[in-house]
Length: 77
Image 1 (cartoon, rainbow, N blue to C red):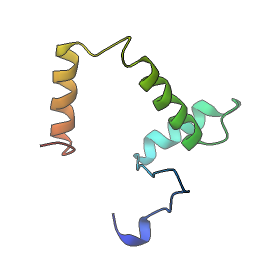
Image 2: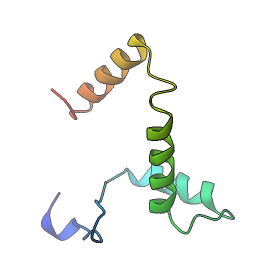
Image 3: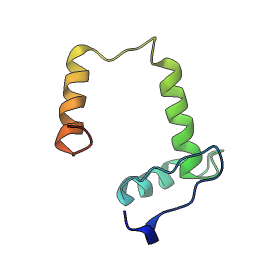
Image 4: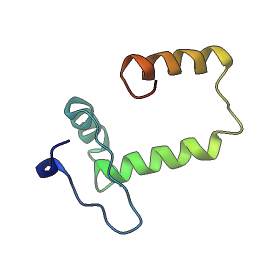
């Protein structure tokens, strides 16, 4: 990401880039809810995912497909 495109994070936070199309869908989804921003919604969803991680693990097949997808997108080697 070019330096001009970087967004500074608040202390204790980290920025994550998501495609604009997904951000627009999320903006529509949170309209009329208690979420003040897409950032707040994404943080909430990720926190919930981490809470349930141990109780609902990925199956081996789901993990394999996820790894293949991440690899095809260039996120992992």
